[in-house]
Length: 195
Image (cartoon, rainbow, N blue to C red; front, top):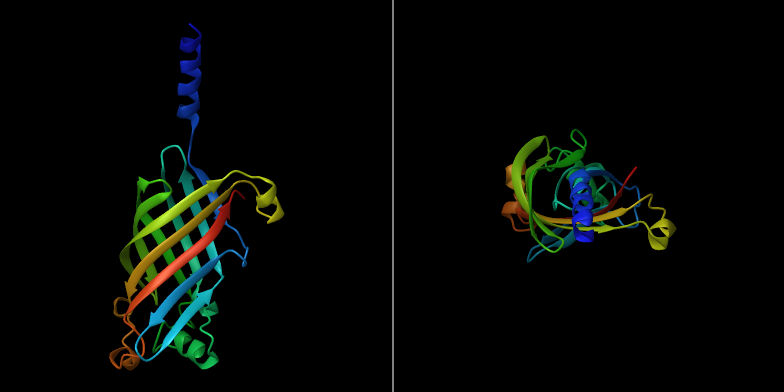
């Protein structure tokens, strides 16, 4: 009889579970976007901590969505002249279009904390469909998260995707010369929390 009383309570709890909206924190120490260039001639990592946006996550249903932005104009490569080139219209035109935007269109749980994600990536004023993998880990608020100044529960997200520069209007001679690869691996890692 006791089990029959517990069952409705469990069903009610699962029925009221709902997606939770998280905002990307402004913690530059943990938020990072990197893009790797590795050729026979020149290797460098482009990096920024200027990530924003929101993630909606339903831990029970194992699904969600995201609308993320990166400040392209803030990306650094370790060489001032190269950073300036990236902002010019010959490359990513960050002077005119500084925002890189990734917006999900479908999220499918794979296993554990791993998800398959489809979405659109906007860069250089051009929007293209992309597919990626993501790892999403929810950590309830605790002394560690409070010590890091994270309000509420912490949602750690990491995304990996490969894009072709030519898809985004980048056709610089350095690509044909082999100094920069056309295929650009992008990694995005950040912490989001309830505002």
